[in-house]
Image (spheres, each protein chain N blue to C red):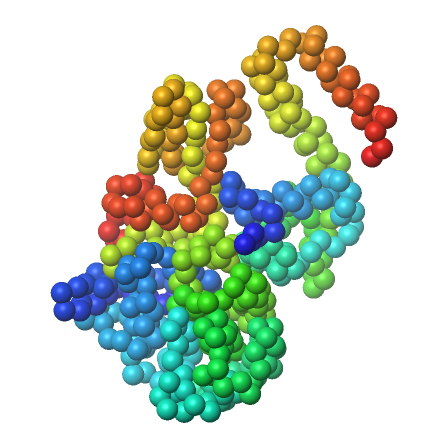
Length: 130
Length: 306
């Protein structure tokens, strides 16, 4: 039985809940000013303890990405999307470029060849229906 | 805040066997705790003593500050659902129906919620007029779970409550438990062998081994705490150097090591560049290692639960 709706074993659940919400904000799925799911809604969706869900929300609130409106709930703060996209950009090298280089070296692909492969993949993507 | 459950020096001896050995445990009010351990570790004995259904040989047991045994004011606030729940049908009342079991429970538990009981029965596909005798093993478990949840008892103890329940019914149990816990917070202890599917529910996990608490930790903090590192033997050695390792295996030039401690982003990248595979242990795997014997899971384990 797959529990916890796609969350994995690798990191604390609260951190994964925070990450999922952050990703949704960055991708525009949750717009600035929009209400984010409540602790209880998240707990039910992910099948996790409500305290764990609350901890995840608090991570984002502490970073100023969410703001509390008393008696109504948590909302995406103004500027949250730009902050998150900036953060992702900063992580891009570590998350994608360095692993790509590591694997390329292992396979004996030199930098010219690698650049050519990237361009080729880019062209394919442009013509492929999205 | 007074803990919901406080146990110190609890020992329960049977002839030729010590079920609980100087056990110490505190459970905070309004939390869900997973009670884990192999068969014979002492989970059932502990739950029965907490529910006042059995007496300690020695030691102190407090539920909301009072001993539960023969104490009506505590026992009214407490429900224990057992794996092998007995109903009067086995004692010569063949016409004893599910509705009778619910009615009896409604008298026992002051917070009883009859609407919740009906909706749970419906979720599990049971009818109130079915005789308990005609129920399958799984349906009996569903009836027990219905009573356990609808009792809305301040201390709710589930002892492997789902014998015979299939995956779908167990999921109903988890969902309804979470839903009702959210609306009516209470203290829940759930003993289970199905660790991974219930892992997300827990605030705390307590693992018993031979009558003692060998691990007591915030469930979410255990996640990603132990990792299997595998790949070229030299790289595995280099990567795990100076870190606690529970188990090493080698086959030719390949090796794997079960390593304790969170892996940082930098180390993750280092592993990748070394050609290593990192696989975090699930809570179930972690518990399996922890119960493999003393020393196997040293660094995370408690010293004598003191």
